[in-house]
Image (tube, rainbow, N blue to C red; front, side):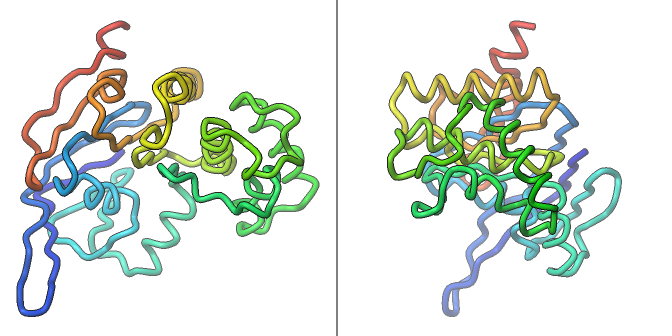
Length: 231
């Protein structure tokens, strides 16, 4: 589904050019649950920005569902992103003054869906993430774990082809982090959702099927995680 070959990424700062990603080769198939792990500054967030069609300024080849997209325009990347990817972030990125239902409905509103259909889909997806009856709550009155569930509901309501989760447990305590990981594993195993997760936490990474480790912009290992080993 995703195939990156010899991906390189450079940043410019003044007259200096920084080489951030070095010849990244990575293939991820439909239904996989992959952790990308590395220390701060390792390049892992830069890599998922490319994978998630947020960054089109790189060299190398990117094939998505068999199509070469590395020469796409920014507008084409934007369309790919809107139609294929759901994003979950460490700091939730919820609109605090909007209700849970309004937050979750945003992707469908942007896509032009009818309000009746949106209401039904919001109810169904909140049930799926364990937030039945929370439609009228405000995020600011909810726990961190509940807010992350709202953000996951928002990410999956449009039935994306894959999810990108950037440090989704980074702001949560250990028990709540495990609850969120259990939810991701259910989505992956029951729904077949492909998930690519960035984390610096080895315990979180070990629960994924694969663990890809990045150091200084290079993939240094690609190994089997505990979830795959338990199958």
